[in-house]
Structures are given as structure tokens and as C-alpha cells.
Image 1 (cartoon, rainbow, N blue to C red):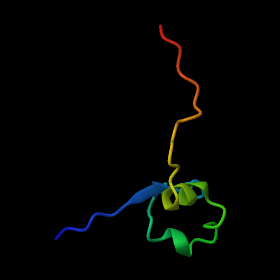
Image 2: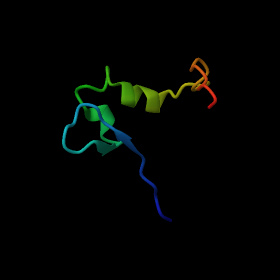
Image 3: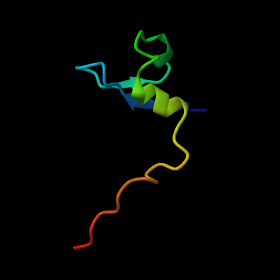
Image 4: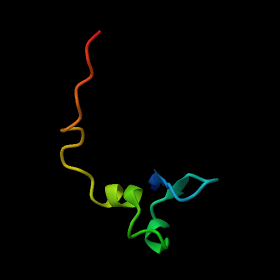
Length: 56
């Protein structure tokens, strides 16, 4: 069976932005990382408070 890996975009890495989520808990910035926090606990109603785009 093929396992799929999940990747997130790390704001702390300048060269390799995409990293596997298995490496995030070991990172020294994991406590304050917004990308890791949004992966662990995604918002329930994403985009709820976004302003609607005006129609053209």
C-alpha cells in the first residue's frame, strides 16, 4: 500500500520551502510557527470573515 506524505510551506526556510509534516515537531520554531499550527488545528470556518470580492 502506498503511503502519502503531507507537506507544508515553512516560512522559516529560505531554500526548501516545502517540508514534510513529520519534521515539524522536531523544529525549534514549532511552538510559534503559523504553518504548523494551522496544519495541527485547521480553522473550522475558513474564510468566514473575509470580505466578499466586488462583482465586475
